[in-house]
Length: 267
Picture 1 (tube, rainbow, N blue to C red):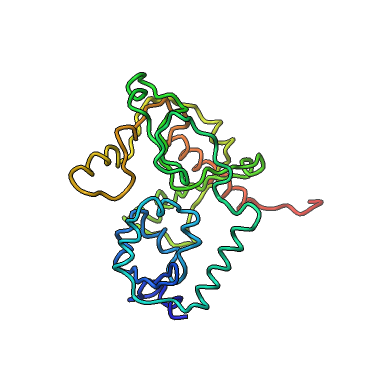
Picture 2: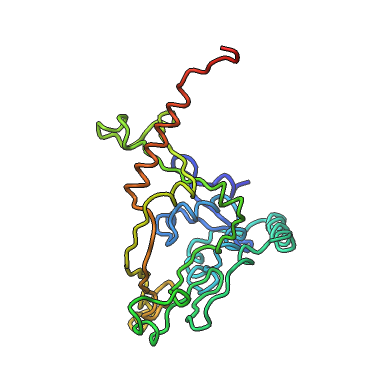
């Protein structure tokens, strides 16, 4: 109960979390979490284990444990840790328990730094061979499993486009919009695909590219990339301005539909 009360909610609230029977005060670390404060706060006031089952990059080095040693403030009651262990065991034996069970096959040519989630770079002899990086050896920088969507899930997908900041409510320089005045349009994938397709050739690079070389000067934190966390491709899709225009038209159409008078049957 003491851990759950320190969930960071409310002024001055500490952020506690547990792992392996130990209790940690992560309050001062929240703002410095490499994955952002939003992600680490998912474990606030509770166990870390369920979250690290998804974010397995924490097991790729001893850095997380070294940081956590400085935050340790006590021990979880054995009965409480047993409940956590039981829930993790139940998760491991349930159907589709592994969030990474649908990972696609990757090229054996890639230099793999981590498999769950997948992080792999382009070999040096391939990197400079062609201007366009072959799709099968394009570098991979993942934080999550690759989703496997059914045809129905694709059909049901809607992109929420929040146009509130473009409304009259924020013309005077306001930065927040009351919830009741939110103006959000929902676009299907087919609607987006109907827009003119534009293609551009551009290069993507992980900000940690060549980090591995820095380890010669001093220990770094993060994936020890060589020079291959970079790739070039031809990308195709809709212009942002076209998506926003479509969303604006959709929002206007929805408003007209909701405000149009409804005729009674037989009128």
